[in-house]
Image (tube, rainbow, N blue to C red; front, side, top):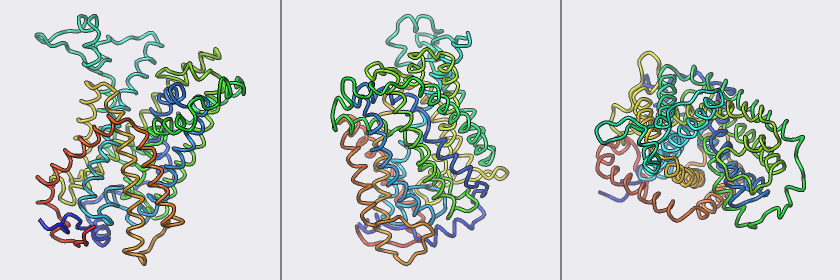
Amino acid sequence: MARSQLFARKPMSMLYEEMKGENRLRRVLGPVQLTAMGVGAVIGTGIFVLTGQAAHDRTGPALMLSFVVSGLACIFAALCYAEFASMAPVAGSAYTYAYATLGELFAWIIGWDLILEYAVGNVAVAIGWAGYFDSLLRGLGLELPRWLVTDLRTALHNPDLVAAAPHLGPIPIVFNLPALVIVAIITGVLVIGTKESAWVNTMMVVIKVAIIGLFLIVGLNYVRPEQWTTPAFAPNGIKGISVGAAIIFFSYIGFDAVSTASEEARNPQRDIPRGIIWSLIICTALYIAIALVLTGIIPWDQLNVPDPLAVALQYIHADWAAGILALGAVAAMTSVLLVFQLGQARIFMSMARDGLLPPWASKIHPKYKTPHVTTIITGIFVAVSAAFAPIGWVLELTNIGTLFAFVIVAVGIIVLRRRDPSRPRPFKTPWVPVLPIVSAAFCFYLMYNLPLLTWLRFGLWMGIGIAIYFLYSVRHSRVRREGEVGPSI
């Protein structure tokens, strides 16, 4: 195989043809739904779970600065995403952008990598959703058997739980039923239609933003500024702030999901960039406000808990608000599940259109005009994994995979500006190449602060993807047959 063939690029003309074909998605989303989609994807498990861990283990009251660092990295990446989304308003997100600029091998790598952000990340979200839903039920006096809300690996460390579970021969029947059920419901909603899914998401976003507003209003009256300097504002210094930023980066994951819906936007050149940027600005402002109030009402060394916002409200004896917050967390993670599931299905569909995955994965439902095959397959993968897997191992891979995707997008902006400077750009990333270089550097810095074990698992995951590419994709690539072959990179 010629080395140059590995970097066959997908011409922009081919992208434009896909926008006009019959086998395309229905354009039904406006700027409000797209912005709500971004907010829905971002505000979820990260802010409701990881803020306490980051403050307790690394940042102390300087948690707010960690949010600023992560937010800056995402804002720079968002400006790069916005230019690509306005130029190539088709499904596929960073995968499509990499294919048009860096070539097929990089596109496959980023497409495989995005599974970590959307599908694997959604497994963690589903498990987190199930935990909050179980807490909500118990608060209402309803309690499911523990063997129906626990993954098998965790249960095996609890002999009493295993003994209480029914058995199929010697095998205990233990799985996370709420996680499985919510993913099945989300999958059904997404198959029925994108417009319907978007309005469900918008409703969930309104609920969770209202819940966050409640936390801020109630907590603001109890903020004690001395909490921010006792015993120190940043007990672990700049290193603690940096590692904290790498941990809470999960709280920002999802704004790029707006770009996966480009093919379903009514005015993608205008509304996709706006949806990406506005959703990120809204979320960053909310996150910094939450960090200020959270660390101002409760000592940071008491935040090593899975539900830090609820614990903070209980600390100031606002138990009624803590109960409402649990409901808000369920709504928050429901919208994340919906948007991530939507994004993953469309990335698989785009890869199948290009021949890198089997052709049945690109099928569109004749009535609902949704990628029903990839939606159902993604739903089965996420539901089964969430029912049986522990949350720890799936969380570790998500951050590094997303950061790597952001690096590829930033590099792609520089490459495309040089290769195709005259191409119309409804939205232009400012200060090129400085801003994309800074964006890539920010992301590499956050990746550097992740544990070695995370890097090793990431390397194994990418190795599996490369093997699939050479065993199947190189022999079925549509771009190799019809498109442009770029020079070696």
